[in-house]
Length: 110
Length: 113
Image (cartoon, rainbow over all chains, first blue to last red):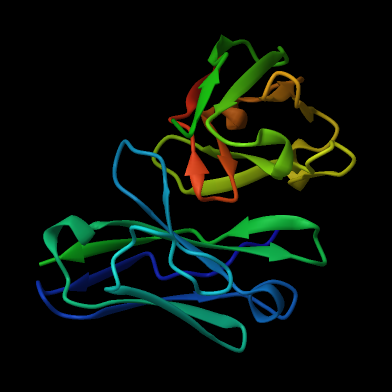
């Protein structure tokens, strides 16, 4: 099953802004939106944004999600050392009747 | 406390079977779709299967169709994944997840001779 496309790595300086992208198609991201998850090494993932771009309670306002067509984006402002992690997008694919994940983006905060 | 706790992982030979479980607490388990998501060592997340609140709908990733079965027991607040005909490529940490918002700590399944 085809997954979503994410850049393998992004590097940004402390206190700068990072924008992570996730490209799918009209059956998944374009139709259903994408969720965003953060995962630190050795820990389970944490939901940052649901498919409708809402942040769960307790998630910093520095994380914001958006979508344009078949591409979803996660913007992280004021980068902090603790933001260094792997970030995954996920969407329900209506043609596959399956959730698909992106390969993940490793964010490095310099 | 709202939590999910997986159990049942371990070492199994290729072609063997294993059942992993997920115990839910602190929320109304029967009100939610539930998912299994796995992560091979050093790799990304892969969704495996999900099941509707009453068990009437189940969906699977292509690579496990016909080999894995997801089920639930709402009376016991438990989710299960029966894994048969296991392959080396099924080696992973298996997480249960609710809405992708609530995750367990995962249980490691290793398929090796």
